[in-house]
Length: 99
View 1: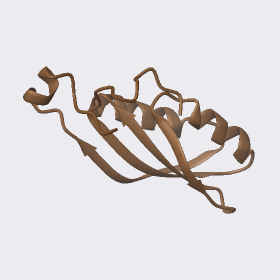
View 2 (view 1 turned 45 degrees about the horizontal axis):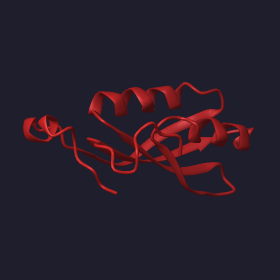
View 3 (view 1 turned 135 degrees about the vertical axis):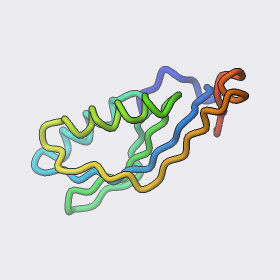
View 4 (view 1 turned 60 degrees about the vertical axis):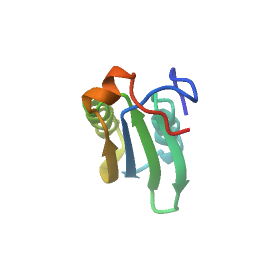
């Protein structure tokens, strides 16, 4: 996972995704995991990748999901889970940390 946030960095959203890819799975997997805040957890022989996405805000999570959808070879991005906490108290403290 490429990240500019340290392991204790404040984040506001975690999204679990299943991404279906076509040909060139290895290339697409490498491109996806180079995105900031994206981590690969599993994959199968049918072109499905299980990823998590960490972002500071819900908007950043949405923009990152859209960026994934626009990759050549990505057939589908399916959110399986999303948790965002952008309450004023959390924002004042710089977000929350889950690691």
